[in-house]
Image (cartoon, rainbow over all chains, first blue to last red; front, side, top):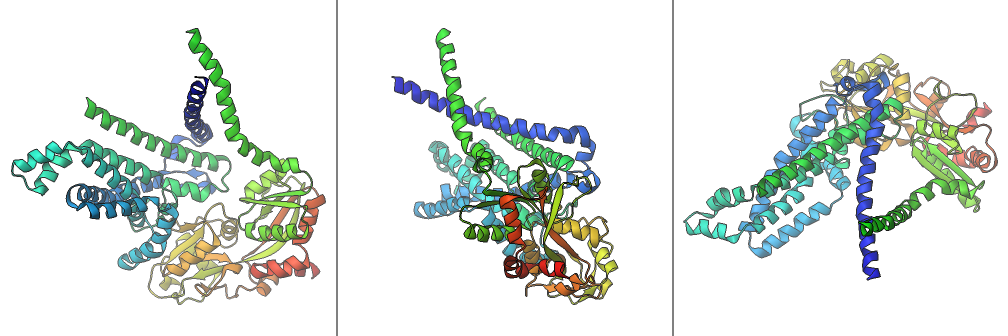
Length: 280
Length: 284
């Protein structure tokens, strides 16, 4: 009995520790970015001009870079992932599905720096050749991110489809619907929430990805909507500059970290929102 | 209710213990150096100097098995701040002291002369750029190679990150502190700049002379080829000293380590592979 109690307390301690860690990280980032808000000011922080040597700390270019590359990654990765999920669950013979599933799981285990390196030596020169640009930019980052979100979306998407009651499919087929009609009109709508959660989780991975993006995005500080022009993201700017930043420069970087944190918190909240709506 | 309160009372110390155990390695990492005493030399600072100083530290520790040299990066500014706070014994810096950093107590030990070479993709036909052309290209006033005597192709600029001492020196000497063009690609190290320039047609960048290889094409600057001789006699202007700073005259192991870094063996055997040794200069 005493042992039972001891283990219970130990587990509780572990749980509270991880909660404490999250709390500390949040407080720390908030505290460190406070000087940026008071000394640099919100208008400067969200302007388009990034030149820390001259007191310009605008993160707009990086914020847009983050949003665009995430969006681009999802535009490529989400259809691929959902398509793979449908194929795995509905179309592929079970042995083939197993092989593909293992392959996708393997993809999830590849360190991002390897994917980034691959992007740097294969993808960037390829984009450079077909567009006549430098090859660095949002386009390259989007493709790299698509590869990274693919396993998340595929695994969760397939899981969602598998958990749907088999009667749905049986009823639809019994009504004379073809396989494609069943997938499009019955299964996908029924699994909408789960698939949406899969996409949002993939988005969370894309928004925070640093290494792979930094290697192919070009790390320039220009604000651009051209996907073939070098630009930066919040994460790539953080990792490029954190080494030697002091004073206001450092505070501005922490402010960017805070924005990143808020973005991913919005994602988490939106997942709760999606799943709660389903329950209601 | 009392039952519950007792539970909490027990939980709290347990949490503290758990936290203490988890945080122990971190706190040890921070304090261990000061615990070990005078046989330890703590160094931090410029990432440019990191490989060179680490090599020196390894050789030094091979010679004196009872001494430990701990080298960390962090950047020149961090190193200088830490040596003043007494967190480290020596700060590596790839730049001169800023006026606000110089409180008169930092002692400078130049350990190598670094020459910065402007390099282009091998496909670029240009061989020489004068001072104005370099400035125009890196600040974005000139965007096509045809404007500086090359083929009709857009120029792609590759620079170092803002934390880099190499960039600081280049911005100051070559660009006279004008802003680098916004479309410039920023890379974190000499090696990445070299790989990027080698892989990207029509690109231009700058790297330390030790990193020049077959994969890229070095340019002469204002008609002067980047060589150690030209840097030493002052005709090639894109050069800088790499420094080690101590706070006050170094003593004990730190003194011995700096002496080793300046020894003929290390200067000619290691420094000369990538940079220009400083002992020849002092003799002149």
